[in-house]
Amino acid sequence: MRRNKPGAQNARRKRILGIDPGLASTGWGVVDCLEGKILYIDHGVIKTKADQPRAERLFFILQFIRSIIEKYKPAQAAMETLYFGKNVSSAIPVAEARGVISAAIAEKGIPLFELTPNAIKQGVAGTARADKEQVQEMVRIILGLKEVPKPDHAADALGAAICTANYSAMQTCSR
Image (tube, rainbow, N blue to C red):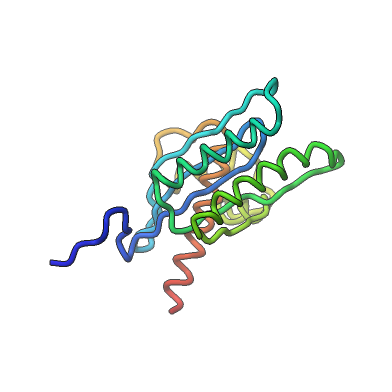
């Protein structure tokens, strides 16, 4: 009987880390894609304190993402792209958080899929016009959870992971 190396994933199982980036609050979620099914693993949020220097907050996010990667060993990652309306200056801290998160993912050689908020809404709820509550409820239903994942940043991260799992399943089926 042949055994997998410690930490090696089942060839049919693909673990995906979803991220909803932010400086104050970064959501994360982990799902497995196995034989066309999406299985919930875990989710949470990385919170930083507004009174800390920005560099320390970014370093905390970097360390936390590294620990999630080490614990769950994802084969792929998905992150929501930057969206900003009229206030460009509010996008800068989110862009910096995206940078350290991307670096942590790249450091481990994990492929990163970047999804727009509308693509996540479309992929999870079936319409790019879905509101946050609709997306959160569909995440709950798809993953078979009793309650909507909280906080909303974690639900958004799970949504990104679900979209990537669906894409991965389509790629596998088309080969």
